[in-house]
Length: 337
Image (tube, rainbow, N blue to C red):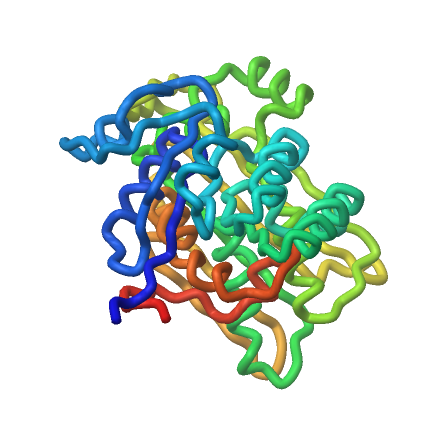
């Protein structure tokens, strides 16, 4: 008897969505059966849009209900927005169809503290429909939450957690460079910050997940954000940064208990930054330091972890889950069932 393949629909066909779809196509345990887009590329073949050099016979549709009814997927790979408010209706639509979800929406990665009402609504609906909803990605989803939590498994005690993510964004996708403000004047940068449209999304969620995973009750979570100012010209495929302009963003998130900083997340991403690495520092018994020299490539890792999480979500109990709630996600190439 042939091994069971997990039927998957791709929802969101931007740069990340197309990468996710292309990785899913490579897996013998996954069958990509449909694609949904909002407006751009609707009516086109997913293979052409994803740059695969061939047609897949999967036409991108803007009618989710029709796609779900026709393809009967087990899991939807959802990659449309960072904002939980903006995607709640999309998630509800998928769940109401009785389909599991793996999303890359950053604010969905650990929303219980930041948006408890929406979290409760999604959780209750998912349990009613007996499906699982999970958000993951490189960050949040791995580097600044799941990775440090996994490392604490070998600790007798943990007092503090610090995670550092320093990225040269020169090789990242255009939307990411735009999101970190590369090429803006300092006035333009601050205007977008004030509007709430320029920031790395996920530090608060990652702090919440770490605290929950360690059983810590925090008194407060705080974030600061400032531009990284270019001292010399820097270029990428998508932007030219002149001296005095913002080349990226520096963000710090801290979790406080009794006035003491017990969780600290340092995030920097900039075009032309040069140095790139990810690191976890745990103060405890024993102290631990783990460094990924060269860093973890954000676009590759986000798409890969979403695809790798498919089988875990397929087997998970119903409800709104987070990466700390499911078994270890690995790069699983073998058959399912």
